[in-house]
Length: 319
Image 1 (cartoon, rainbow, N blue to C red):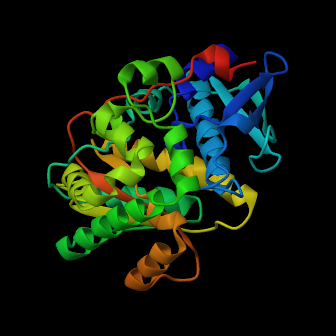
Image 2 (cartoon, rainbow, N blue to C red):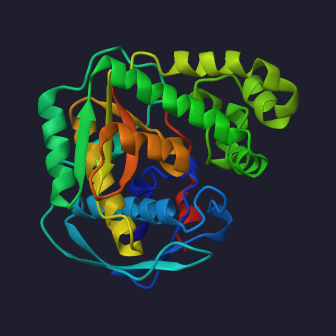
Image 3 (cartoon, one colour):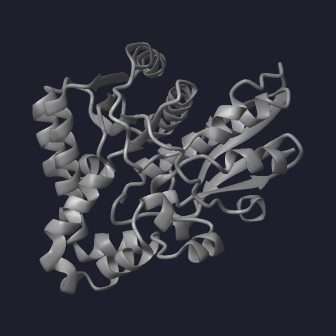
């Protein structure tokens, strides 16, 4: 049973496709989810907020896979992600079979492709807001062209600014594959197809950054071309202080993402703006943020079917 559940749940998204989870089976009904020290992001996520949220996403994916097989998955949160840390205990109990969400989980994608220029419809945005509110969060979106251009530009500027830092660039390079063959072999990280750039350009940017700096304005224009057609951006604010809140925010995010998928929408998180304090402050000022912190910024719309990122085989996720 656990093998079947992990087969489906391993498709859950995670920062840089690190897949920092491990399921340790105790018996047919009980298991533990731990984080893996070699898959953490100590530079970008030093307190493990986003990876704790990612494990919340993964546990919710396990819940959906269990429901499709007639089981309820109960979890007990233990503590945040960290070096080989126990994050949650799991238990399967008999329940009602609900298979409607599993196809959405298997279809869900992050799309870094160009979007087609259509804004997300109001009915979809309203449903996403209801899902966020059900977990105590607030989702807001804008399709105002000037504001969308500002957000896309802020994300691009912040991304290239962050990648100028040696430690941050080295960490991201560790999870960046420069060929499809390497992506298939490692079964994690970003592949050239998923990033939308040729492997030789990715390799040149990361491995010869000093030499390529003079043409960075051109690279930034290429990146902006890659995110063209963006007509809607959104942000989520809510409880984001304690490890339990990070974990539950991840659970909500998967439900949110699957609802978007059910409307034919794709999305791409703009993580650099959230993790960079200066960019985050600019965003807060522009949207006149209330008390709760904004912990996710994203673009939302329609694109061609994005390529699937590689995933670790079940044997590397299950013990």
